[in-house]
Image (spheres, rainbow, N blue to C red):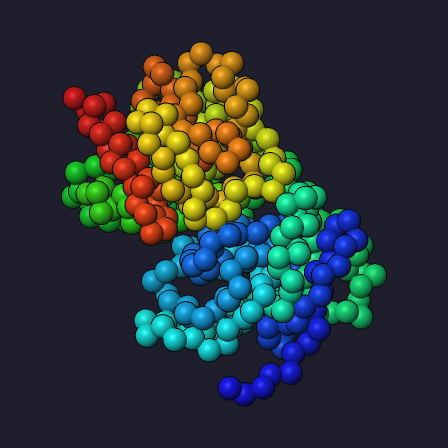
Length: 370
């Protein structure tokens, strides 16, 4: 393997703490965002292209990143959504026969700054103790004063509306128009694999922009409504919250994932909050309170539904609980055709424990049609 001379790089945290590393490529740049970490051992390409991570600097806890390259069929959106990558060992060579290109090329093509040779164990331990915070990663070490000023001006994730920045600008359709079911999906950061899961269940899906009204959706004559995952704080999403309220008023079949789950909670007067460092990984344990069974789930969220607020609402029930910290992982409305989860049933990281939720939504649609 040819030796690479690489530029020095640093991670500058909002509180002034600095971690050192090296640039993956020759790019001279600086990236800003909220620093967070994902504990998944695989799936880096899906993470980097997940719209839920928009505006975040991603720390990967797996020691090796890039070893299986990049494969076009495994992206979750139209490109990389993370603000930058921080890892321990970056693999320039890859061995997967299916791969189209190296991860280095994949990131360079989209002008994404990546730095490696970072003590990611120390960085993650620091984030766990001190919470997710804004940070800058840079190879422009001669501009530190300017970078510190720009970092101070970077908006906090709390109160930040980002869904509009990743949502589709125009509605589009996916699947067979002659399919049995028609699903209207609100794109507040939707992943491609969610749409695939609907299509393989004989659904024709129309994906709508973040600010679509119920009247616009109903004009397409859907059988069910879906609120997607996405980035940022759910509270500023006034149009999505209004849409959820309008759907619930008419008791139409409604399903929400992640950010969509939080929007449904807000539509019912249940508050949300920013977590200390969020849940991001592919082995999070969840208890299904209806079945008593445990589920291994994929999660990636920095906000959550307030359990205290939910339990004070007699019309809403907790269906799933995160076993690490007892936070709300799922809810349902007792007198409406609506449920939602905080995790990602479409990801199926090894186990397919949560994929039944798509089938549950189809069953709810059938009941509504009966």
